Image 1 (spheres, rainbow, N blue to C red):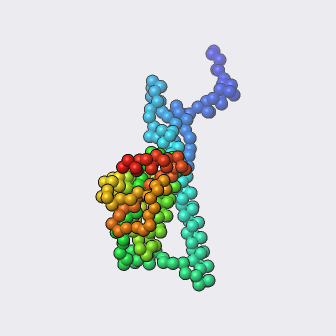
Image 2 (cartoon, helix red, strand yellow):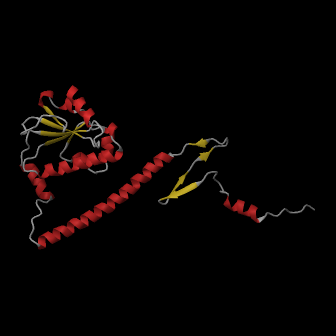
Image 3 (cartoon, rainbow, N blue to C red):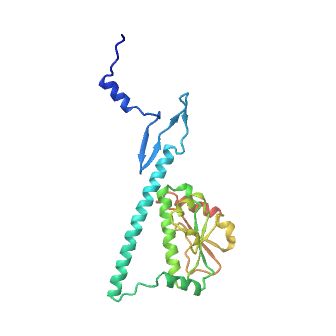
Length: 234
């Protein structure tokens, strides 16, 4: 009679740890099961829907969206508290959103244009591009509340800029003129004034029917000279 072979505790542990059907490891992230990779009968890896790099970017975006929602809720609560305190102290907080919309319909815009040139995406890291977008939002907010608003334009609005702006829902409906083309293709050359701190020319007053260009570049002094030389040759 053949003796029945008994498995050792180590063998039992191996059997328990082996996957029943899959030949790959699974990782669970945010309650979503992600496969690290499948293999066919010959041992070749089958491409998954996400690469590791894509997954890292996706996780980064999820975390950013969560932080943005939390930040928005806190800002909304703080704004509500400020309004309450202002009412109690009889402090004027300025026009509300409804009043701003009415002002937008009633007030004529000046023919002067302020233009942000976004043709420098390739010179900046992602965090610096976000700083440029933040400055654009600030300019937009100030222009909306101005009694004499100017025409606000964005030129060289490429794919990177669109991706960065897409973090702000509904930006397409803002009172901003977005152009994929560079500023030289949008405005007459004789009506363009490019503002740079490296120039010796000083503007005493703004002129009508003129486009004043501002370089959308956060460079920490690394590219200012190159920018000035580039504009000089244009």
